[in-house]
Length: 495
Ligand code: NAD
Image 1 (cartoon, rainbow, N blue to C red):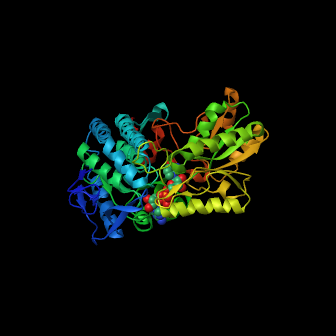
Image 2: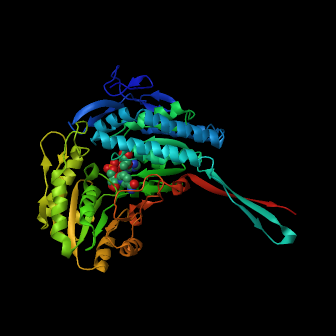
């Protein structure tokens, strides 16, 4: 496959050059000429080299975004024109869906059909926010008594320069969830993809240029979080950081942002609970629970990793989910008939392995999985643990792998208490045939999203985000626009 971006071609392309960055509408290497490798996690082999941005390169990208914003290169267009450009971007993403999916699969390991679904979800983000571009309005408010009538109105203005820092587990979607609403709001952007998965973010930069986004409005810089990400978080010319990643790094971004008190939106980690009530339809709940934890090899912020099952159906559900895990075909993402790909990296493989080993030492019993598969790539078997309790790290900390801990409960109050016993609050689900129970439990769960008889659902129309240490702000839906807008009040004396 050869896909050209600027004068560079993906991966191992015609000229074999390192992938460049996008700064002020131009594709360029880093100032130092340094590069870093990006890997195929299915084989551990290098796909290509990528420009290694330094603090200096990051500053150039921020300066480009600042200029683009201050010169109103994007806001000078009408809201309808901006909407049309975002719509065109969604069309271009769809037109390249096969190639983008292959590249995403190769760089992060996810099976191609699932990568393709992610690409279409990214396209949907641009389509949805294209519709919002000309519907961002203020309000009119009349003030004062008759003798001193004042008319007030509000303007919704773009916040300015947005730094976007995203993880590797859904690279194109994570970038699109920020770029699409930020552009609809009128902002200028610097995107930093995860160092593990820079390739589709660069391609997205190319697509946005092709769609008609003016130079400097979208910049893409590639490099490590500790330098590039940290510089973006502290940069005085960045007005807001939109971050998706771990709670630990989120905390360091909060500290770095204190300098100019920049606003933040944070989509952080999770340890999401799933409750199976005694009356649940197990023919739906068992595959639903398995999908909630194992999809994308468990590398999902909202993965349902803590399962609470009523004691009357405990054994049946545990065996059902374990069997569903055993039946999943684990393999190389671009092979056909594969359900789960590898973990992203050696580091992640070691992390998942050490959590499972730690769980065993703490007294957990492995019902299924529990170990690496093979010795090439970073494959890990879908794993179900029982004899766990809420004090164990496997039940408290985010593992970010295909590992489920299961506990029994006696009544609904106990189930809700166990589910809410977490420092996180990202997602959750409850499985029951009784609609009233489902909605009552939904109100009691402390999480940004609750599924009733479904775990992974929502899409672009529904806001998603975290309670507690799972984040600040919301992505998707109308709510995401708030991350990128300021409200200005204008008052005018009428007499
Ligand atoms: P991570 O926090 O290690 O990295 C995320 C991004 O932050 C990367 O681009 C990384 O380079 C950058 N980064 C690292 N250190 C930094 C620093 N000091 N300053 C600024 N940036 C820095 O997360 P990850 O391992 O890439 O992704 C997995 C995590 O992301 C999990 O915790 C998962 O729950 C979370 N996540 C959350 C959501 C959500 O919507 N809530 C979605 C996807 C992933």
